[in-house]
Length: 364
Image (cartoon, rainbow, N blue to C red; front, side):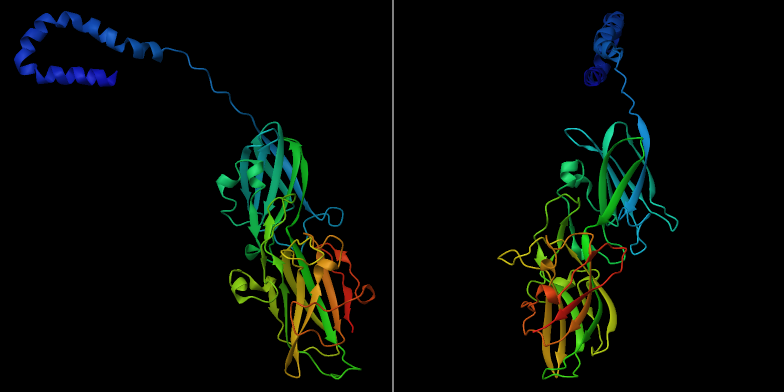
């Protein structure tokens, strides 16, 4: 309509100097009729009633997040919570994103979150300590898309590891969600050596260095997602792999101490993602804790096959606490594990908020 009126006015203006008198005399009585005909479609559609947009109901759900349910009444003191994301999805065939909320808990945080969303059945996903811009919006518009999101070990932290959990519940009703780390934590709490009865009697291990090899560095954000298969430090410590970490200490520690017959408290901690491999094969390496040091100027390695310690390999949210007594020299290859029998190693899995040890003995 505007385009037609514009053309009409421009024609009238161009011919004004020649036809102005005749136009006023012959066409002025027709102007009201022409205007009505031209504007009739716009007037017709402007008066057509528009259906009102339905107003979506917004409800608030109280979510209580817990850590290690049954063992700790609140979040573990061992883990810090810097940031919390809550992603709410419709619990239907499409599982589209309903809302996404960000929280910054203070020192008095008691694990309670007030989450706003639409009404109905929902899936509530809680993720703690993710980077502020992760996941990207286009990757979380549906629950299926969120299931494809992967986290990287390079972005993890011992103080604030990534924690996730989810639950299905009706919006507006109180819900409880248990969150747990995507990582497993390996602790070398204590170490000593006793070479009596060997050619190295009363010798010490110098320049102690401890690290993880054959480490899974990829994990699904959701606990039920498929496991990762991106391994780093394959067969040995790789400086290029370490360079990508914002906190290299989760993979390698320079102890800077000498180890003798007296037990030394180290409390060295490392992180890795789950590794279900229990038998080594091509593409299926076993994650190892490697103790490296020198005796009389020669470098030795004491690799421990962590994956063989328990059924099902390394699992997320578990501690592997080790008190290590070295009785003989190790191997000359960091990828050649020391042979151990069941009587020489005892394994006890602990939760993150517990501090129990189990002994590991190296024998010939």
